Image 1 (cartoon, helix red, strand yellow):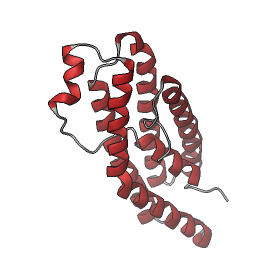
Image 2 (cartoon, rainbow, N blue to C red; image 1 turned 180 degrees about the vertical axis):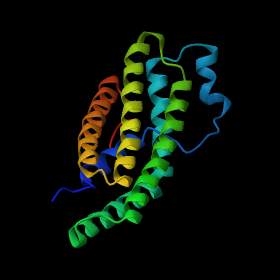
Image 3 (cartoon, one colour; image 1 turned 45 degrees about the vertical axis):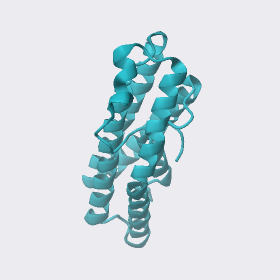
Image 4 (tube, one colour; image 1 turned 90 degrees about the horizontal axis):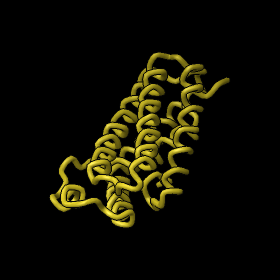
Length: 181
């Protein structure tokens, strides 16, 4: 029997979601560097990692809720052969909320303005992160649509995208952004 809710996907999605922030307000000092002049690489990393650390703390309740929903869905699969519509919906909705928060946080990191010399490298990180967000939403839609084989394939793609994003972030020098919670 295929598992609709692979534990690895839930863990991977949690890692990607760490890039985001639930805070839509940013202080003037958050973006001042990008408006007054380019940040250095060290300044950019320090600010972005600070955003990611705060975000991970704010998203913790949703991550716990996602893990709980995944356990429930796996129990239903084990006991009944399939996860219920309610379990699938809860997974998809919780995942969607996490991704929405992460997208807002990525926008906040982007608003810092990348150091000029690193713009291409950071754009690649941002694009792979955004792709992982789209994949996460597609996974939720496949779950809700009872497209289990598709969900499994999407989960594999999501795992690969997230590993790539984490490797790129680490290579750039991030300590928090892109790392496991």
